[in-house]
Structure formats: structure tokens, C-alpha cells
Length: 345
Image (cartoon, rainbow, N blue to C red; front, side, top):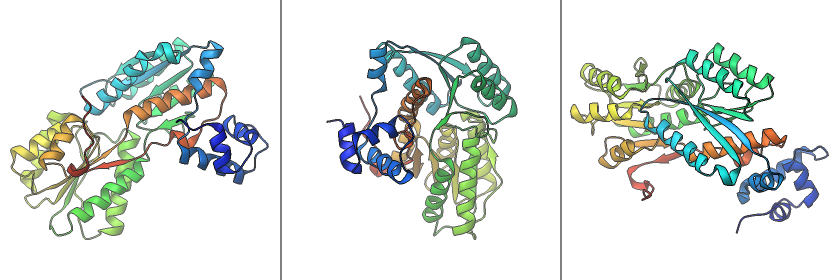
């Protein structure tokens, strides 16, 4: 049974009126009481049925999702979740448009944001590239009263309304702890493979990873960063060259995409069992590599949760309602070959 506002009130030890004030971001609630209510919401897993309320009001919500093009498996999975939301449009009273842009192309992304602005949607969700032109385009949307949610990669300082994604510094720190412990008995350096430093999520993961390695495993050397542009063909070429020039390589942290190329390089050079490899995002390719032992651990974010969160936040902003932060927090999952979730048929 889904939790109700009555359950929240009982759990927090407050009145229904107080719960209503917190849910609707109205004044008259002390910070300590507001914290109790939000903790109760998080503990109970309460999800506000905004769709039902808006169905009664007869409101429709036009949204634009701006996503990177290409064959990045995680991004194609993210797009699949957006298309699943489009299939629910009649029930949820949304009208979703997808605008594809070239990966890591700040100019094209700024142009897509301008195009979205001309459509006058209720809100925009975007996988951000951290560049001044992109931030300015987001600010123009906000100046026009159009809500903006960044997906997967954030754009702080742009005036965006919300970020639907994991704490990427924490993700990088987690990868650092795993790498340091998994390679404890091995000699040799660690390599870090990124997509591009143009995106905030990759920079944040690198920051978290290098901080933990310096704090907890200072004797372990880190090699210069490799940028593979999330391109499997380029990544395979770069990793092959890396393995050839670093015969005692102990580990690789792949903090972006392009993992098909990484796996191919490790397997084709015969190093898949001698190099500790930690990657991001559970895709069919990384799942298979976990099973075979080519990848040791995968840090994953739930793309479906991120898309649903973005839509909830955009609806709330359009209606002038509060965002329940506990409900929108995206967790970091860690998968080894031993705890892989069962694939859905």
C-alpha cells in the first residue's frame, strides 16, 4: 500500500496541516519540524501524485528533453526512459519533445536550448555541457519563466532549478576507495579514462577519485588523464597503447562511457584478468564484462529515476509547488558480478 499524508503525519509526530505546509512549501513551519517531515517522507518512500491532481485540473505540460546523440549505451538507455515517459503522456498529461545534439558540443547545445526557448515549453531537461554559452542559454530560459532541470551532468551557477543525478564527487570517491582496496597487493600505477573535461560529472568524478587516492593511497601513482570522448573506437585505441607502454599497470578507472572499447582492448591484449577495472553505468556491455571478470565493479545511476524525477520537478515548478529533495535524491549503486540484478525480459 502506498504511504499517505496520514502516514507521514504519524511518522513525524505532527499534524496533517503541518505536512500540507511542508509539501506545499508554505511558511509557518520551524526548520526542525520541517526536517522531521522530510525525513518521514524519505523513510516511507512517499511519492506525491502530482499527475492525479493535475488530471483533475485538466492541465497539460509541454516539456523538452535535450540529449546527446551517438551510441553511448547509457545515454541511449536514458533516451529510452524518456520515450517510455512519452508513452505515458496521455495519463500524465505531458507533451515531451526530444532534441538530439552532438556529444560534448557546447555550441550545438546552446543552440538547442535557444530552440527549446522558442517553443515556450513548461520546462526543459538537459544533459549539460559546462560552457559559458550553455549557461547563458539556461539563464535566458529562466528569465522567461521556463524551468530547467539538468540531467546526469550539472551546470551550477546557471540558475537551473534542479539537478537530477548522483553526487558525482561521492561517486569518484567511492571508485577511489574500491580501486585502492582492490589493488592493495599489486605494484604499478593507476590510469584514469574520461570522456571529456567539458562536462561537470566527469570533472567531479575525477576530483573525488584523485582526492581519495591522495588521502588514502598516496603511494599509488596516477598516470596522466586520458580523454576518450566516450567513443568506443578511440577508447580501444587509447587503452591498447596504454597497456603496451605500462606493462605493470595495476588499474583503470573509466569515469565516462566508451566501455565497449575499454573491454575490447583489455580482452584483446590478454590483460582482462591482471588489471583492476572500475567503470560507470550498468549497460549490456558492462554487465557482460562484469560476468566475465574483465570489469571488477560498476557504479550505476538509475536513468529511469532521473527521468521521472526531472518530470516531477518540472511539473512542480510549473505549478509553483515545492520540490521534496528526499524524494528526488538519486542514489549510487555498486555492482559486482555477484550482485547483478536479474535482467528484465
